[in-house]
Length: 423
Image (cartoon, rainbow, N blue to C red):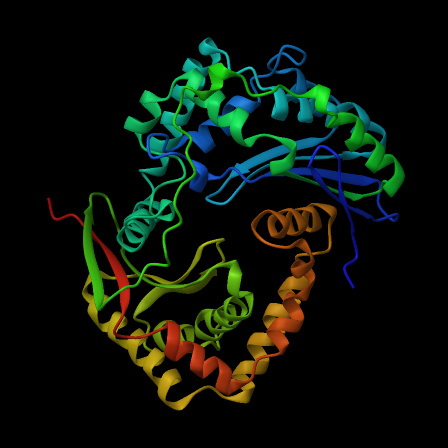
């Protein structure tokens, strides 16, 4: 049974509420279906840029006022942009939520995006891009996803690049904002020490239709046409690239396979199990063999990233350059072994136990629950959020062996290697 209440308001906004009477903490998390996959072809990096501009205020809430009030109340605010969403959260107490939440909603619905503030913030975003470009793991990952998602927004940086950011005007950003930051495109999640009645009244009063700007003719001067969905990419053979970076101490090996998006959550859960089985903990196959026994890698991990339209299964290692080929071959042999010989019941039970425990540990606090509900409601159906443990426990060894055969071919994947530059 889903533990939270779900309301669809007249404005089109969805409210998800769960009271936790044992805590005074309240989290209000606003999720917007306006990640980088919503950007037009001429607007790369715009969703993340807008996240910065939201906090530059409105006619009613000047820049800095919201941050000052939150800090004064002992609260915390946060924001993030991803491919599939943007979200903005407040962690506070019941007594302060009634003053802080309306200010957050005002900024989200009526962001002014003034020209002078945009120019100042442009420099901040550009510096953020430059700092990420100094991180070899981030650089390698960007090259990897670009090689996989060649025609899809998942293949570009959420931040955009310097050229993208330099060309965005305030009118462009305002058009993007007016198009997507609307109640019908938002989910508000409130979790913690506040009963349902006052939470519902607060959100209803805050998101009244006369509290947000309407789209004007002036906002239609930017091409925000709906992107045509691109089918899940198919990797034929081995798609390989090598990157040489200066000042790199250890090499990186990054291998990736694609999986289904949220339209097939059962398969996604199975791939999550395989990722744990392969490289989570010292007794997992890759860690035990390549790090503990052969000592060919300094670090190795496996990750399954669930995304709305196409998910990503990655294996990454930090190692000496001369070990790259040997480690890649060993990983392929492990995958082939699973495909040919399957997995043991002991391996399956361990992976299921780890994932179910991790789910339990990650749903203990109001912040964690608000994030879980908001994420699922934005990319699929919120009630599916709590079915994860049951899905994980439903798999048997034969089903995982079949998923490995279908999705983790040792002959069809993308690989990016990073090596220290010899110059």
